[in-house]
Length: 196
Image (cartoon, rainbow, N blue to C red; front, side, top):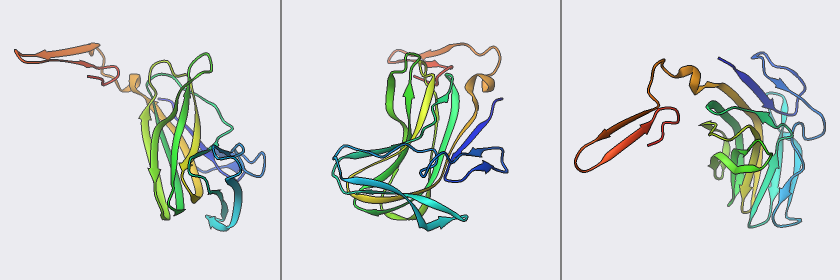
């Protein structure tokens, strides 16, 4: 079973759990902030909001529409990979903060902009997490912090993990499909994707 861990943080060096954190610039592994409402947002490193001795990333958004802070890392994945995302967020204002990934196909086209989306509203520091399975046709993901409406969002400890693959967990000899029916209904369960 394959296990990958990455921490998108503001600190360089090897972590005790085997993950890594890189600091190529002032925002660590994060690209510049994109906002739909031009000029209505900014991102900074907030030295006054420290957790574990490290500063937080702060996004201040004044617009009514969406914004995005995207990782510089495009992560290779395969169908069936089990991905876990987590972060700690603090939010002030009427808007929300979200974590997700953008999924890409083999041609580099976006399959879904906010796959595995989890969101939070105003409140003090709290964990937010998402767990999802990579669907067919997706070959890479890019982790994101996003939001909508006016808010200040502080983010810390954004982590993604590839915890394995469904194929490794699949029982040997399991049929591809299982169908159950009666006079009123027929249901087919696709064992590879858990789809009905």
